[in-house]
Amino acid sequence: MSTEDNNWQESFSVRMQNIDNQSKKKRRMSVEDMEWLDLYSVDIESIDDQHKEIVSLINVLHDAMRSQTVDNRLLTDLVDQLSNYTQYHFAYEEMFFLKYKYAGGETHKKLHRDFIHKINSFKKDLSVELSYEISSFLKTWLVDHIIGTDKKYVKFLKAHGVT
Ligand SMILES: [Fe+2]
Ligand SMILES: [Fe+2]
Image (cartoon, rainbow, N blue to C red; front, side, top):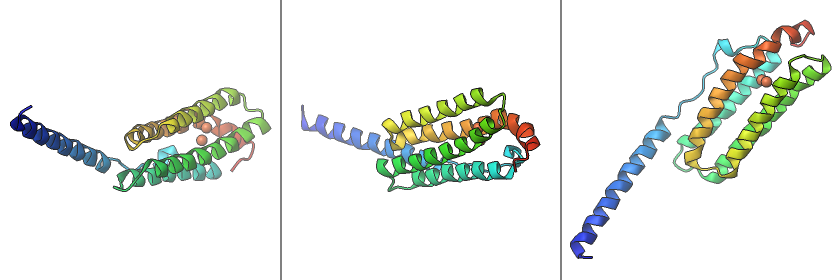
């Protein structure tokens, strides 16, 4: 290969690298925090508080994703934290299903299990790139689950005095 070819190839790869870095930077900047909206409220304070905590853990993950120094180890720790807290929250809801024999309990529990399974599969090969996918999955899942599934137990749990 001639020196000219080599030079051309080098400058081409530098240009590509720059474009790649710019698009990575843009993606970092575009991670939007999740905002708590009143419409997510299930009107049971203990459960709203736990849902809010999950939102804030998602935002901690977002902060890390935006930082230039984030590494896979830190991301794994944060996803672990999120997964552990979410499991604690699921156990809290499921305790009431069992205690008061909630009819929709089994279907609801299966959705919780599927979620944990999905998070664990993400964790197997976590990377900064993959964290964008995780983040959008988490946001969508949480909102859909609260509105579409958690809200179904509200009347039932309130009738049993859960606050
Ligand atoms: Fe929930
Ligand atoms: Fe739930």
